[in-house]
Length: 109
Image (cartoon, rainbow, N blue to C red; front, top):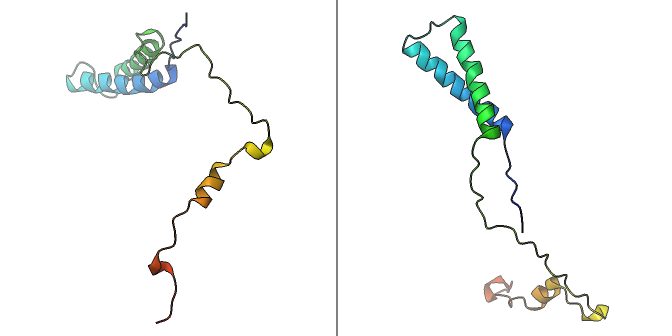
């Protein structure tokens, strides 16, 4: 059985908390709950940073975007027994190149 590990992003939560704290402070100032130029807007910013960091560390995680990884490893490619049997993909592309166009040929009239 495979276990899925959840990846947390506390630094991202810190930056989101800054925006949340600034929003709280602006709403508090706009609604006249706190006065601009006093300590409460700064305290609301710090509270927002703490809430954002804690939420990103311990909050619910999103569901994984892709399918669950399979535990089976892919089989290795068999190695050719003779080095002459190996075919390079660039050799195939160069031998099957399209013929030159008549307009590309430089002729004097």
